[in-house]
Length: 90
Length: 367
Image (cartoon, rainbow over all chains, first blue to last red; front, side, top):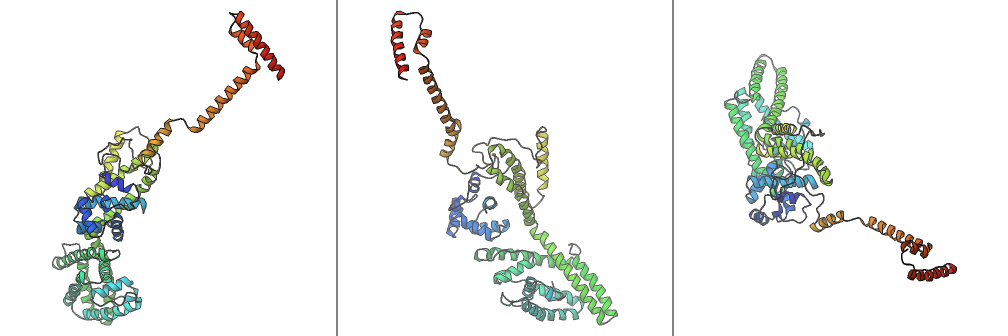
């Protein structure tokens, strides 16, 4: 079966609105803080970056790794979360 | 890759741009017309190619290589447009190159350049090993060209250029094809999987809006999506997602031979999600609409109670019945009632009966 977390399900269940970046699946406190320092303080800003990269998985994962040092699992979780959100609401 | 000029006017603007970049020609302003690009292309690249044609085959190969060496630009030194053109030349359709994406695309280009340079060096050394058939073709055509040019004059030169232009087209198409498998097999596979994902997606999107009785349907479509996604995550570089899917489908059929056939051919039974076990519950069984706990409780309570309309109806019916009973009691004489009720004691009740009889008589007189 899939391995989507509770966080993922909660995020994908409704429009993200003003949720903080830590609401994204795969992004915890540490990564969230790093992203916020770079200016990505809200989930929709990360969504913006995801869309500018044309929802490309490789590029988005590289960007996450470079920006906040996410490991492969965290990258995958975040990508999956955003992709599913876009499929549902975009 | 030397560009054998067939007719630059037939090239697309992006092709012209990338060719100019390859030959280190500064690009005209971005909004220039195609003719400007064609002119520059003819001016600079034609000169180079004229020099190439007039030399021997060996020189040709060397000249072929040297533009390649000059072509390795420093990704960070390129402008946004140049970077985009260079990526496009290698078959990467880049998105907008803005501040946040620039670094990523530079990295991507440097990766591609490394793999390109690697391939060309290897191709020059061991052309047979790799399936770089363009190398073999080049040599073959080179031999043919030598034989022809040795025999005849200017007419053969024309044919050479045609052959070589065809060869160049084949080379470029082959290069593109080779580039795709080397660098982009994973992502192209992912794109394929993504498109496969999208097919079950609309089903579950609508499934979310339906009631629990139809959650079976949505769950049925979830499982292949979940499986294909899991397999894509696990086996990205290797096997396709088709393999893991089939065995799972077969086990379903084995487990539930009695189940009705569903249009998708997927069988699944309804499962209660296990609280607290991430991943165990059904993947996409999200609530119909996000509702607060109080509204959910109220809905539960309201479902159990009798609806209001029915309550009012019952009340009215009972009221009517009572009124009818009252009217009936009024009409019929008390005497008859009391006689039927108490036949035992007559003395006291006889008096009461008389008084009541008088009352009823009085009442009836009044009416």
